Image (cartoon, rainbow, N blue to C red; front, side, top):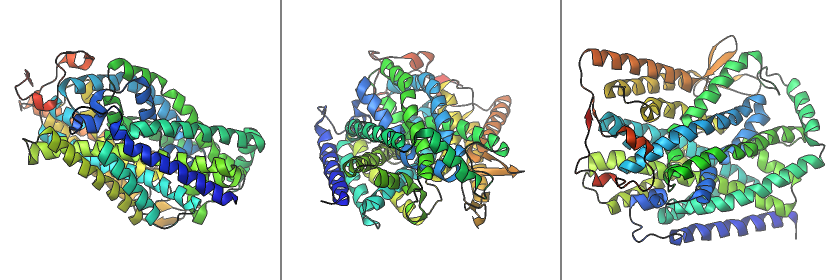
Length: 535
């Protein structure tokens, strides 16, 4: 039996097992009434420590971590390590802000940032705008996962478009049937497979001279390239761009709809805090994967057809034992499918709760909500598949960063709103639109460059906006600053003019509520009217 046959055989058996497990997830902790958005979309808000740990790791540390980041370090060097400090920065922010978000959203039955923004600032229109922005930003993030999956399938030997579409169909069916329970259960399998892959990678690096030799050879490689922007160290002109990229990416994590879904599935505040405190463990895996890009350079790994997203799969193919390569391919594939499923669920929740229910079907029953979200989740996944078939980014990480520019504009309403209700709803809307407009203009103005710095396309070439002298900044941060400036200025002017704001249905104690609060209930049970505070 050839090595190739063993690789494909092990990969196929593991993926069939994952498929069976995904279908069976609907029976795992099955509720009495599974046909509600509470059950389908956030697992009944009943997951404990270990389940949340694996779910958060499965949805947040994804194919972006294991495929796109090594591809970036392989292509440009130190810049690719931006993912490591941004992941570290998110830990204390998660500990503080996500705990407050869990409490207030559990208290009011919210499932999305957009619902919270609508209630906090008394503006269904603001909630709808946040929802649309979140859905649009999520699409390229789902595409990142599918681009990575496509790279793995191509390396295994399944070329063309049909293997990707088949994989998307399978995960869509699992999600349609089982909701969040499917990715939660599969996340356990994913982490076990990834642990084996990382252990094997460490052994392979040690067998071929260790990290010292790896960094020396990678340094020599970058020194010989014509590009002044790559290398083991950041160029002097790259510090500002790196810093803004870290800050922007760290903030964007909190605004993505899928970042909230996993934490809202937790059964209490303690579960949220424990998992937030333990997240740095995943940063170790992230740093190791980033360094594998350098190891691929040192060992002369070449990407298939020039696609940098195949660097890690090709490294696995060349240096892992055949049976272990099959396990690694399965790990990477599951690492792409799980976050794609969670992201599509989150986007569907946002559509149903902030667009469909308020504007199309105010009297929608819980069963109707769940049914609509199921179908919308399918549209999101296949829409993302269509996106990657239509565009050809140099690095798949660019798709995530472009989505980050968009989602960052919801920070004032969705993130700062957890701290203060001072902003005027009209100011938030004006700021969000200003941020989106300026962000898209900057993205349009960014040319696409090849490895030598030559312009190959005039527009939408990434997310680093040049400010002259070889220095660039992350466009999302600039757009967010414009957003905040407009928001603050408009709020001051509107309040000075005596224009009333919306009614805030949240109270200070809501942000500290914990499991056992007798007032915890679904949003559709709040029509009887909690007391509100006029602005």
